[in-house]
Image 1: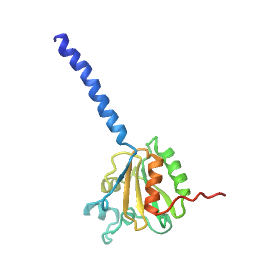
Image 2: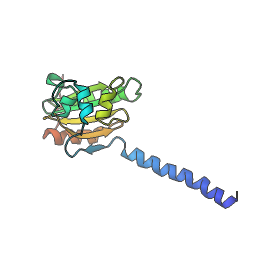
Image 3: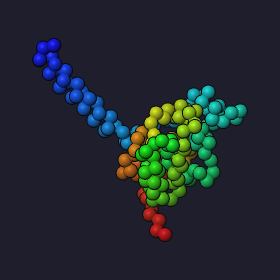
Length: 167
């Protein structure tokens, strides 16, 4: 092989890999607003709750109700047993939720729940959904969330600013 083509390939391949890596990194952890709800295939919805009528909200699809949901918003974190970034994310999300009245954090382990991973198109953990008061997903974050961006999303979703609780 000639020296010129070898140099082009040797320099171009790392440059392309660098650009792809930077683009991936810039996208990870950002809040993505959802237009409408997360579509769940009928088969997946029936696998989540066999024999029951089709759920109407994302919270129902996840089997969440009552006290597990926040009155204003809920941060749903999808994790797995082997996710090294999930415990830190869980602590950060629990702390973020405590800054608001009526916002809860729920951690769902997908290790043995492939049906939920498929239904909500979770391909990496952590993945976070922001559910509004009606139980529908308003935003999604893939990877470790940027807490400032997530805080802004909660301000929008709840319609009010944070209130710190002092114990």
